[in-house]
Image (cartoon, rainbow, N blue to C red; front, top):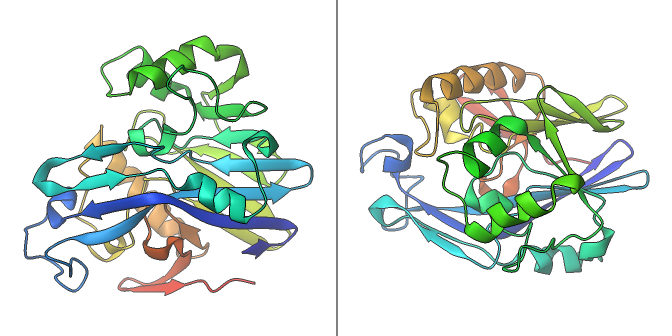
Length: 263
């Protein structure tokens, strides 16, 4: 999308096969969505923002890795650089990486197996509470990603409050899915867009408001955050990391999600 003076491109790093149980629902729920042998097929989304002299990547995908969850659900990554290459962007061109949260399918391309940075010129932005939970605490994180965070601390920007990454790009703390989860608010002229990370995993949660996320660290706070963002989506388009086709949209009525075709 062209968002005022910003160019925003959605890139999928791979596929997340999801079942109703991920949302705490019964296996036969919403069969129109879970139409392929009881699975829905969702992207593992990242977003590239080009504005002024900054080239900002929001989330770093699963990386060349995979993860098996309960009920046969699987995350398989590895495709981010296909999308970046199609846009003419190399790893060295990225000036900032904003990580919505530290789950495996959002940090996979940050560091290689030797814990060296994949994006050598980038500053990494994230919610400080995720460092406490995943790097120093009980959260599940790949060892080489933890080692990379520890070794490259001088290249990081941990946030304890909302912060401007560059004019028009604001990191907004939205805890619950993880302790330090953040969304990214984009604004250029009259245009605005919310990048939701996993605060809302899928638009289906907007019409099934009791559906939570299997990965919520703090379900109560996550639900409060979803309700706050749901209200914002009545006036502002948004897109999450696993929204089908990575299409932004806006909630017009309690049971209607209108995809944004964009400029």
